[in-house]
Image (cartoon, rainbow, N blue to C red; front, side, top):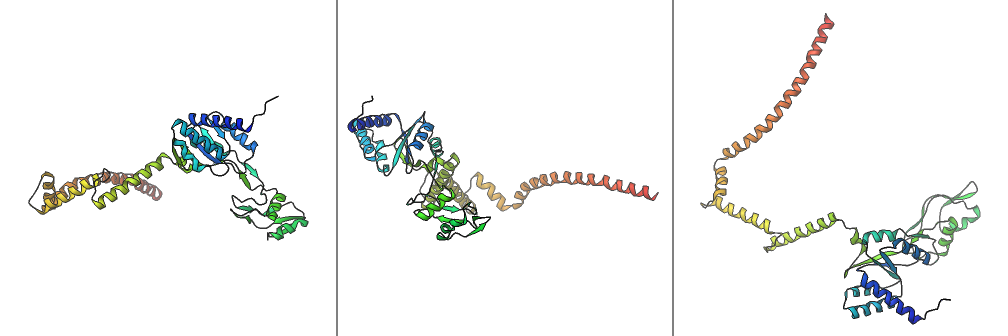
Length: 320
């Protein structure tokens, strides 16, 4: 016969387990476990077995364990979890990829009926069609203002009806109707709300960012830094190329308007004094382009000539 442990012994065992997890793992997913049953939670544990551990418990007990662990080890990183332990939450310690673990957790969702008093997490729409209910059940539809008709001895819904809106509480009539129609509109599972990684806490949306998204964000930030630096004339690495280019333009403009000169400015001055030189440089480029187009035109003419000759030959043979 197994010896039943006291509450104090259970708390001590829980403290040791949590402290061990805090020592071994550096990545934690914080998940809300509202309306998640014990059998469903067991399936999630089986699915994550190998590199992840799901830990549930009272928030006050978890906070106390984290604080004791921080005081004894000097590692204050896990204190970032303290403000997140609100409501019915659990901790998923993992050594795997955070995004993959979150996707694995999302697979274990179970459909649930709309019980009276529950707050709807999504909009509930009753689709049109035959309900299979006999005409004596029309009172449910009349109370909820759902348009129906009798078709072949059963009640048929004519148009789709938004029965419950997201955030509204489920009433007794809505719950009874959905139960009669066999509709289980809600699905529940562990919902990841925050992610902890080596002292940093962020939302799970960050896990969806790709390398391209990060590069776009970085490029946008560099562009903003360069714009601000140019506006206030403050040198930065991002603005340095633009500043050098603008400075060169100013020096070139001064050289063109004055007697001061240097090798690169001499070429610009020559072009300004005699634009024909610029035309001479541009002419070979235009000639090369036209030269490439001429053979193509000749080839087209050659292709058309045999067709004309064949037409002429054909005509002569007909007149002969």
